[in-house]
Image (cartoon, rainbow, N blue to C red; front, side, top):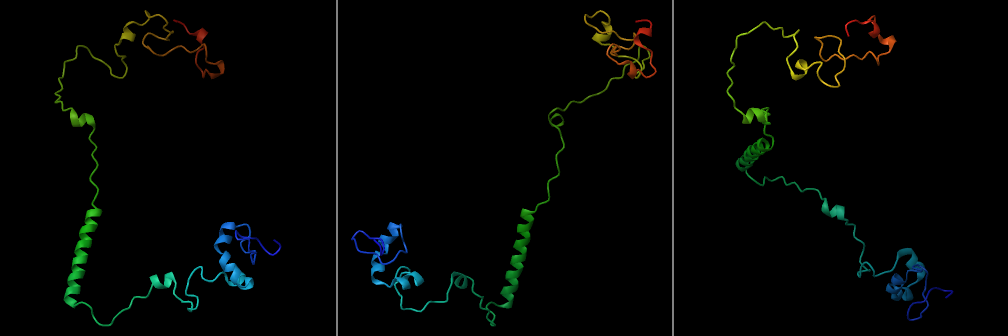
Length: 189
């Protein structure tokens, strides 16, 4: 085994090109016995890629075969009239396709579901005032304003007409009173 590895027929192998790759060693065992190993190491095994080894190597590649220059002939292939018709048809169909794919956007619909589904005709009825009211200074009559002072857990308010203004004097620091009277000095609690 000093010269090389052995195959199944126990013939000595000529070189160590495929050492420890026994599948490929078996595949090229017949080629290794007949060839000079210096030539095999330099140019590979003959007959693996092609059987026509005596033919000259072609200069053709996939790119050269796929991308060839177009051959332009100087003689007109179609007449001027048919060429103009084709151009006109091409422009017309291009314009139609462009208009189909680039339609102007539809205007957005801003109607709400209430507007779309509920159509109530409202006629306002004007009533005569029983007494004059001030919209900005007068408090509305609600459950809370009618039951002021009777509810359990109601916090103190500073006046009779200030319903929901709570007394937070117990939690406000003295330094935050900006020229206001302190809670213990306020009368009519």
